[in-house]
Image 1 (tube, rainbow, N blue to C red):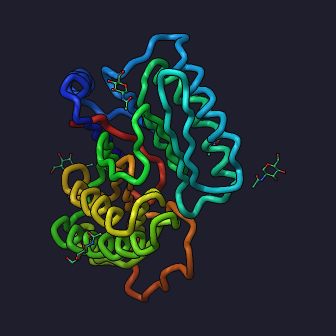
Image 2 (cartoon, helix red, strand yellow; image 1 turned 30 degrees about the horizontal axis):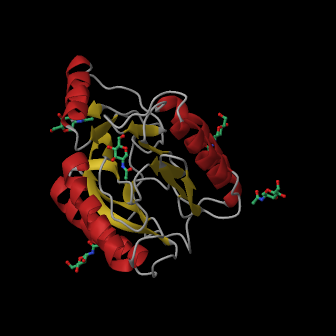
Length: 285
Ligand SMILES: *[C@@H]1O[C@H](CO)[C@@H](O)[C@H](O)[C@H]1NC(C)=O
Ligand SMILES: *[C@@H]1O[C@H](CO)[C@@H](O)[C@H](O)[C@H]1NC(C)=O
Ligand SMILES: *[C@@H]1O[C@H](CO)[C@@H](O)[C@H](O)[C@H]1NC(C)=O
Ligand SMILES: *[C@@H]1O[C@H](CO)[C@@H](O)[C@H](O)[C@H]1NC(C)=O
Ligand SMILES: *[C@@H]1O[C@H](CO)[C@@H](O)[C@H](O)[C@H]1NC(C)=O
């Protein structure tokens, strides 16, 4: 199975870098998590106060094993560093903590001198900045990840997908500011392969950082859902990752069900191929 990855940032040089990367490597490239982005042109001097402030911030975030979301701020002599982590809504606290610890170890080596950086794992995200970003909707930088396997009936599949995604997003956005904003949905969608008309389960997930208000979460998720068109039109799986929210869908379960699994209907016909989880990603712009 082939899968692709789309990356973008508001920064032109950064875009150019990935554009060049794409031209140099137009073939499918294997990618697995984590996916990180270091803000360009916001660097600090190595061994400066910022470096030790960031280390304090990350160790403070890594020391928390009791919640699946947390923020921290370190006020240094010249700078203030803000940071947060959030785990995927279905992930248990032990896995969450492990993911956050991994992220706090990886990010400083991936972005050694960046004043602002973010890393997305399958199970968590971690970000920090010298700018205060709590309770603000950040939709950049963004990453799109796609499964290059095509659905055979893209127009009707995407209509169904947007409908499910929209409902999932509405659920995720309901809780008030400060509360967990996560929802997952599994629903049957019709699909065809060759002459076979069948139904397959589409698994959808939407999540915002809990520091957003309900309406800001909705706004963020609307943008991410709109970007599914940009990255993943007609594909069997896709993700749009923003700093403040993210959405994902697949034709296999990738999260733990919140409630009962969808009831299988007699119409289900097992389809050959493309059921696996093995994903490879193509860097694309
Ligand atoms: C958190 O850490 C404490 C102290 O190391 C430990 O006793 C506790 O079991 C941990 N909790 C979780 C959810 O991992
Ligand atoms: C954290 O890193 C360890 C060691 O590399 C790895 O075994 C584990 O799967 C990682 N956990 C998460 C949740 O990323
Ligand atoms: C963050 O750092 C950048 C680069 O040094 C600087 O231009 C910007 O003013 C800083 N922002 C804040 C809020 O301190
Ligand atoms: C999916 O469709 C696109 C455009 O029609 C095509 O270029 C691509 O090769 C197809 N991918 C697969 C895995 O069949
Ligand atoms: C879902 O669609 C409805 C109706 O078009 C709209 O009012 C709502 O804002 C949408 N929700 C999201 C999260 O996009």
